[in-house]
Structures are given as C-alpha cells and as structure tokens.
Length: 375
Image: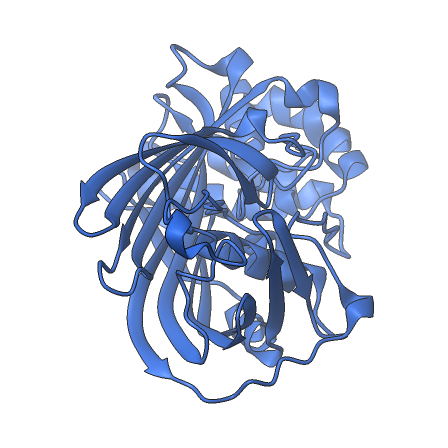
C-alpha cells in the first residue's frame, strides 16, 4: 500500500459554532479559545478501520499519532507544528477481535515529512479559514494537517443551538448540546450528518481523514451513509479545549442491515492537552501565493509495480489454508489488502474472474476492506 494512502487524513471535522459571549465578541471563531502570545501542546491520535461489520472480526486500516504545537503570534493567526509522529497499520487481530497495530514501513519517512514544515493558518470571521503551507509541503501531509486544524476549530457555543460549522467537508449543519456547564459550557456534544455538508460528496472526496473509501463519482456517493459524533471538554477559566474526541461512521447502504451491519468504515480522532506556555513572538509571515482552503485535495499514489498474479496467489493461499494453520489467516489477509490498495483499476479488474473462481466470499471481503475506488 502506498505510504500516503495510510496517511490520507481520518477526520475529526470538529469545526465552529458561534460565540455566546456577545459582550466580548471575538474577531474570529478561535479568538477566545487560543490566546495571543501563547503556545498550546496537544497529543493527537487518529485511526480508520474498514470492516464487514457483523460478518467478520477482521478489520484493516492505519493509525497515526503526533504531538501538535499551536503557536498564536497574533490574534486569529496560528503556526501549527507537528512532531514525534508515528504511522502504524493493522497487522493482526487479537483473540477478542480487537485490531493489533504495528509500525508501518514508511513510518520514519512520514515522521520526517510531518515535522519538516510548519503550517500557517489565518482565520477571518467565522467561516473563512486559510492555510499557508510551505513550498515543499506534499498534498498528503497537508491533508493530514487539515484534519488536525479542523479538530481545533471549536469556539464557544450557544446552548442547544444548531449552526453551520466550517470543516474539511465544507460548512456542515451541526447539532450542539451542552452536557456540562460552569461559568461557561465546559463540555459539549456535537452531531452531524456529513451528507448535509455543502461540499461533501462521499467517495469522491477523501471521505474520512484516514478512510480509504474515496475517489468515486457522485452517483456512487449516494450509496454511502455518513455521520459523525464528537465530545469536547474545555477549561472553565481560560476557555481552551482540554480534550476532544470524534467518531465518524460510513456505511455502504446496499450491503447494510438496519444501518448497522455491512461494509463500514469507522474513523476515530482524539486530542488531549499536554501543556500551555507563554510565547513572546509576534512574527507571522506567510506567502499569499501558497494559500489553500481547509477542504482536502485528492492524492494519487499507486504502486509502480502492478502484479495481479501475486495478488491472486495470495488469495489462493488464503482460500486453501488448512484448518490447523488458521493463525496465519489474518496476516495473509492483511498482506493481500495492502497489495490491492496500491493497484490501478485495470490491474484489479484483470484479476477479478480468477479471484471469484477461488472464493466469492473472500474476494468480496478483501475488496470491501481495501476500500479504494479501484476496489
């Protein structure tokens, strides 16, 4: 599987609600969350699993963790740095059905790329989020950072009020409920139907920050049902976010049962505050020519080597595996899924007939968990 496929952003698309403090209106949606001349350090984690829910315990997908630093040199201006990143992927399934992750082959290179450049972010008003990446930043890494940015776009909320919030899917109608309140709302719950976002077309866009169901045309997008729920906690005195967690769910409707069972992708993201410190640096330089939106961009990364016969051989090995070697099944399955994710449409198509002759159930399960448009 291509390295950037593992990194395609899992989304914690937790964006903005209007401020309830009319007596102290901010100039942008983050002005009261992140104070000027301060640095905020967070631990960020995200994962995405493709599976056939209800039919098998096997799941497949990547996991990312990073330390994220948000520097605020000027009001509504942010410099985001990511460090100590790691990239892992599912390699096995435990006895209780939980995925077992191990470091991915491209983890070290991914960490270097994530740390190489800071990302400048300028927020104007409520909805206008502008990104200013450096010249050498790749689209894959920028997409990952887009997910982190959208995780931080959580201003003050009005109790029990629906708002359109900016996310990597565009403006999304969001139901916000205050679950704890002290001087301010210290805990909120967010719910949204991602199909209602104004620029979200599942399977044409990167459906989830790390989801691999992406790139298909609009009519096929209607076969996907997508939703998201988030939980956030805030400091009562300084109003910054101390914890955030989102779960994003995509299900292929024609193969689902009661909206629960079938071909699914479950994406999770989390942010935990580590530290806050003063930082007396007001410099915020950026190149206007490099401006990008919060919306994700498609990435094309297929393997140079396209070997249909190798994939068919793995499927044959899987289909004929003796019962007394069942412990090898998850490893072979994951290896086959990884191989398929790097294939072009014509390569996948050329091997389908042979695959179906070997095993119809295994073929469909592998294709579903591969999750790419080609599959």
